[in-house]
Amino acid sequence: MAEIVVLGAGMVGIGAALALQARGHDVTVLDRREPGRETSYGNAGLIQQEAAEPYAIPHEPSKLWHYAIGDSNDLVYHVPAVLKTAGPLWSYFRASATRRHRLIAQTYSRLTGRSTADHAPLIEAAGAQALVQRTGFYQMHRDPRAFDKAVGEAARLRATYGVESRVLDGAALMTEEPALRREVAGAVHWTDPWAVKDPGGLVAAYARLFVDRGGRVVNGDAQTLTQDGGGWQVRSAEGPLQASDVVVALGPWTPELLGRFGYRVPMVWKRGYHRHFRVATALNRPIQDAANGVLLSPMVDGLRIATGAELVDRDAPRNLRQLERGLAGARELMEVGEPVNDDVWVGHRPCMPDMLPVVGPAPKHKGLWFDFGHGHQGFTLGPTTGEILAAMFAGETDDDVAKKLGYGDASVFGGARYG
Ligand SMILES: Cc1cc2nc3c(=O)[nH]c(=O)nc-3n(C[C@H](O)[C@H](O)[C@H](O)COP(=O)(O)OP(=O)(O)OC[C@H]3O[C@@H](n4cnc5c(N)ncnc54)[C@H](O)[C@@H]3O)c2cc1C
Image (cartoon, rainbow, N blue to C red; front, top):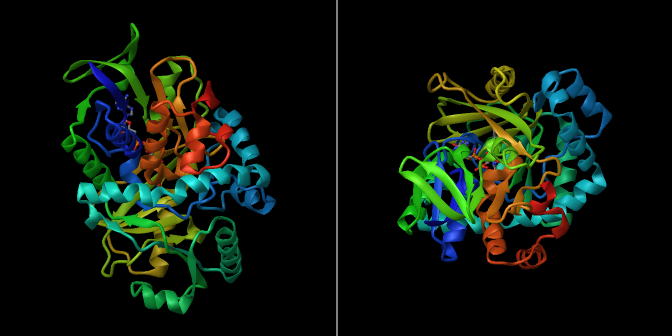
């Protein structure tokens, strides 16, 4: 009998498995695919140490107007999906109001603030240094007014949370990035985040480390989970697995599984796309093209153009509008060649209305643990929430963990929120 089964081998599941294993537990990870092949594969690859404040839904009327008329590329929506998730979206909108958002950020900034430190020993032990560039990324602005505003915001984030940045005008940016052929207003260079050239490869490297340290990764369908006497059972390709404890780390697929056990998880899925392109001159660092809502990331497979958010049903057909607009914008800035292959990746950010991941014991079932809902920053936060989960598993209370790990208001965090 396994002691703990972690369901889901994305960055979050593997991060939890490693942290539990480090505390001496016998852990098996179950996934229907190889580790790191879903959302943790397709993201923009940033370990976002600078993301002190989670992504809010803007309240400014001018921004909402641009969203309403479909004039903005960082967020587009489909009316049926908005109606279907109206309740969670309304909660998300309310949590985005400045006062509440800043309160949430007291916790969030502590989590993202320690993210690179939590990844560092794993990168080292997994021998994955070559995948990680400790160079930060640029948030680039074409319009001088938007640039001035971003410079002000960077100063606020430094004063409030100690987030480091440099400011570059358009000429300085061109000097640092010879691939650029057009001068823009300028960029904020977030200096402390790390850029990963193959996000799925990093998860796979962490999974190998977990196996080398004695863990097991097995193939199977998490939906076969049942309660079995005092413990849990799930079917795997290697036969039934029994465990005293189960961690649910299924990212965007979490609500289906937990629904079967009576939990209504109000997840908002924000879809994103990426595609790889050939370039003659690679970027030295990722560039966020703020005007077009895309991230241009140099990856092992070419230039990855990753889009902002599309509010759609998880199974809705693809709509390549954001990607095409992002590509057109990128081609104004630099020479972008043909796609590397025919693949257009699509995935969904698993966002919670209060913008915080859900980590901790399930309120209604003994031996069931939550680790999901990491939204825009799950690639960043997997190892960090793994540490929190492992501490709670060891019997530490929300308050103990909050104090020890130095995050803010413990009452807004933890599994009991969605009981
Ligand atoms: C376009 C885009 C860009 C992003 N950029 C960044 C970024 O730069 N930095 C950052 O920190 N975050 C980023 N994110 C967010 C980040 O990718 C996610 O928050 C994170 O990957 C979620 O990790 P996860 O482990 O929870 O989910 P996943 O990686 O999706 O893992 C869930 C796992 O569960 C498995 N699974 C699901 N159902 C079953 C089942 N029934 N049986 C067995 N297994 C199952 C899946 O196969 C999968 O392996 C981005 C997201 C998108 C879409």
